[in-house]
Amino acid sequence: MAISAIQGAHREDLGKSFRLEPIVDLITGKAIGHELLAGLWQCPAWKTEEWREWYGLLESLVPELLGKLDGLLFINTHGEQLLDTYIQRSLSMLKPQARRVVIEWTEYRFHSDRFVDVLCELNTLRGCGFQLAVDDIGAGSGVDGLGRAGAINPQFCKIDGTFFQRCRDQGPEYLRGICQHLALGGSRVVAEWVETEADYRLALAAGAHLGQGYFWSRGLQGLQPAGSQPAGLSGADIAEQGEG
Image 1 (cartoon, rainbow, N blue to C red):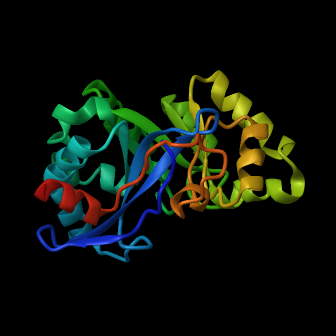
Image 2 (cartoon, helix red, strand yellow; image 1 turned 180 degrees about the horizontal axis):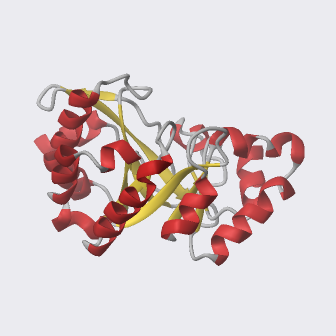
């Protein structure tokens, strides 16, 4: 699939805004799935109750999206959310779609004293058929991403965008060792914040398998095969298809 622009959309029937970003195979140029993100253009500053509402809405939104999209759907959660009983219930309701859902573990402020509890919850989700991803590898704050990846051996590892973009000055070898390490552990590596064709080539040269970022979501054709179809859909696209 080629990549079309991904726009934010507000669903009145859901009462929340969301957007979808394609995750693209760097060799084939095809989207292997999408990341479902809260908010029109950036993550909202919601309080705990609002996040509980968001995950509750996913019980109906995720099956709807998977009925319209090919591939996988990545859903972000951080440690505190994974241990929240309301959010645990909402995620458990997605068991019928588990084989196409990737639980993406992202960290910014979580304390390591409950690290083992988070690992247990992630392993419970894996046992239900969900795939796992570790986000923010290389980020300068939060629980170390490489440590988290080593602890759960996820199917996907996502390189923090700021960390990836240091390759612009340092070259692909700056990231190559980490990509090799993660790949040897059995993970597919996703480079985030891929914004230009030069970034695309850096990610490929560094050994990443997949990419995500403005290079695809803004509708650039880049190195995509001619005549292919859009990989991304906004919430409005989904609603329109549902009415058809």
